[in-house]
Image (cartoon, rainbow, N blue to C red):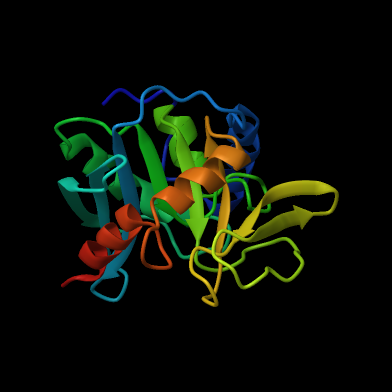
Amino acid sequence: MKLHHAHAWDLSPAEARVLQGQLAPQVERQDRLGPLRRMAGVDVGFEDSGRITRAVVSVLSWPDLAPLEDAVARQPTGFPYVPGLLSFRELPAVLQALEQLQNLPDLLLCDGQGIAHPRRLGIAAHLGVLTDLPAIGVGKSRLIGVHEDVPEDRAAWCALRDGDEVIGAVLRTRARVKPVYVSVGHRVSLATAIELVLGATPRYRLPEPIRRADQLASRR
């Protein structure tokens, strides 16, 4: 897999923040999607008290969400745990997992944030820019931003805002179940991201590709 952008990973936290500022303007916030047949979930776990990063990419067919391919990559963790810089800790292993796939997916659903991030470059946005693959962030919790209460019905959502900027959507994927935080990663508009996340979440709180990746990333 040839990266659209590449950079060094042996950075200090200060250098990583500068790089985020350089990469964030390259995030495309409008739809540039080709035919969607393969949707991948991306999740990362850690082993050996955080010394080993375990990245999983699980590819499912679209729209029937049948499992097609899983890739697991393990490598020594090379970046410290720093809030707001988790992609520098997790993405080297994710890229290694993507390299193992027989066919690249048409869309990435990442367990984490897209532009709903202090410097607008969460893991989904970072990965999308590097690979130039369409990407969506689906966070289990809020990193930044404020929002109104979300109605209890499935598919209800409200805008996640940072000041005057809409940085994502707080989306109820199951009635009366805690919502998820959807944000643009790359090459997908927020409206399309909401539609696709709902389509990938027929039964549970999390989209099926992320659920499968999470199960594999958490397995020892």
